[in-house]
Image 1 (cartoon, rainbow over the protein chains, first blue to last red):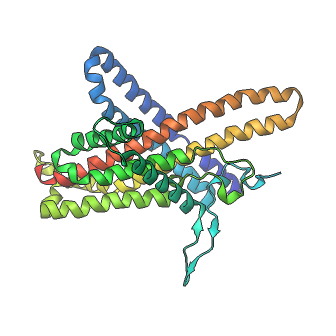
Image 2: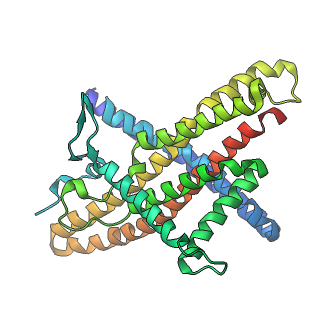
Image 3: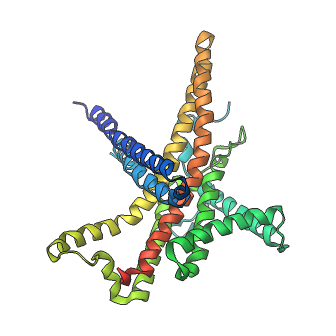
Length: 75
Length: 263
């Protein structure tokens, strides 16, 4: 196989982490909302934690993006 | 026609010299990245100077905005670090406001026909800028952690109340997670800004190429146009959220340094 083609396939494969990040984000927001609907008075206090978890989860997806960029532009 | 060099999604991140300066063999040119950092910093200084120039007990409009920023970061620092965190407030505040302004200024549209070096530019869309900020945070954590706790800082890597046989594995995990902190801080901000701007440019590119196709195909350009509008709105949210996340994580890491011996 051509090296250029393998590079493009590799960059495409590096977008698979998006699936995991999507599942993770759904779990975070879904669980936060189900908790917030049960006890709305405690929801505001937990919002920073939720956003933090959002950022940490999102990072796994973005790492895949960074890997794709490295594959595409540095080799 | 102008802007052919900015036609692709990646050209917007190009760093171009505006004023060529050389110090011996070191290139210290004023680049578009440095220019936008200066514009951001200048805007912050002017805004806070104007807001606090006639500080009153009953705040005016500008002063209210400045107070919202101040109280937001102040609450954040107090809630995460506690009363000892007061001395880190100036650092966290500077970090938050600077990242916020850098992120937001990069979303301004470029004046049509501006030379390529003067296009709007997001300094935080470059890994080296965010990595410098993250390294600064982690350096403060390490230096202050050892200054405050002495060798007790190492307790950070060995949580108490665990069986001894678990310790080697856990210390290894904790050390790796500590060492990956600057990287994750830097890559999160960089990748969010970078990916957001690439997506914006891709949508804009769809609109332009569909409109230039002519005929009935032009109608397909409507959907990506609204897509670009939606992504722009999302980017404003992301710009604010990432500045917030950077500040929160800085506070959490500083909290580790302040309270390392209590673990």
